[in-house]
Length: 273
Length: 187
Image 1 (cartoon, rainbow over the protein chains, first blue to last red):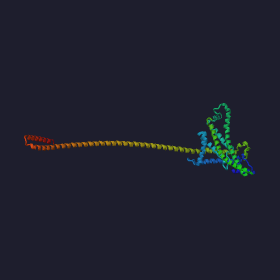
Image 2 (image 1 turned 60 degrees about the horizontal axis):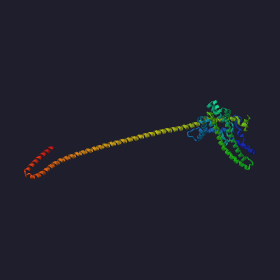
Image 3 (image 1 turned 180 degrees about the vertical axis):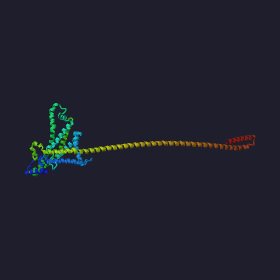
Image 4 (image 1 turned 45 degrees about the vertical axis):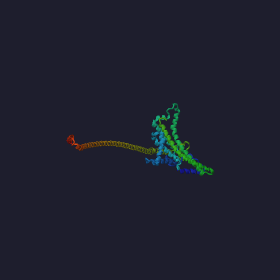
């Protein structure tokens, strides 16, 4: 799959020997299967599905024979889920709500992580979550989750009252504060969740492509560069470093997304915030 | 929506089109999302919880078992100590009793010895007294006859001298006869 892209990049570069900076077209590759239908699949969709299926399969594989004394795979899976449970769920939500929302939080964390991490896996080379709708889906889930949690906890009227009219504030302030809170909680939160993840993934991918295509240009396709071709070494090192950073970012963004979801849920169920 | 058609064709959408998803993209983000959530909700997290709960139960069971074993050991120890103390007390009691009995036996023996000694002493006294009496008696008779012999020897020389001597002898003989008769009577 990546061969297709690489070949297309190469041929494009070979055409005139010039340097072509990556464009947003990177994220809208041509269709591969079912073109023109609702189930049209392109490279990114395939990568995303592969990542999700592999992640789910690994968890199933690790936990299917749950033994009291865990093997290696089981240990890793347990530690991973336990990380979400304690570091995100228990710490932010408290034990009771953490138990309720653990499937959502764990699914969110590992789903996003799996789709992010493909950005640095050789051969896949694009984050499955670098299309707007993917983080948006998870953000929508977070949105539904925290509104649902609040309404279930307090009842609809009291929930919205709690969120929009902060207790202990003199009433004239509400004229300013309530619209801000409305905007913040019910509009900005889901959008910021999805955009933060999306842009991190897009920019990371573009930086990687930039580094490696520049390296390709300096070392292979560039004509009459002379000593300037040594810049290729810098871009290569930069690309390798960026790969490491992208790995960290992939984990960090999954963590932030899940943590913020937990915080939003906590703020909804809290009596006063 | 022409942007979507363009996106599907491999071209980058412009501006806001970047955020308007194609239908297939919506489909292919809902499917993995649903897959993840359903599997985590119904399969993976329950498996995880089952493992953790089982382990917790095992650990708690192990701790409870250890506690009960410890309690049993403590009870046994207490019992042994009680038995030991009882045994010690019993031994002390037996020893005390033995000592008392020993003392009693010793006293009895002493008393008996003293009684024996007293009895032997008394017998010896009696025997000595009897022998002394016998010696006295025999001495008296022998001294008497010796004295008589001596006296008769002395007296024999002057017997013919005068009349007074004849009287003395007569009287002496008469005394002797009477004492002999008395002595015979005593015997």
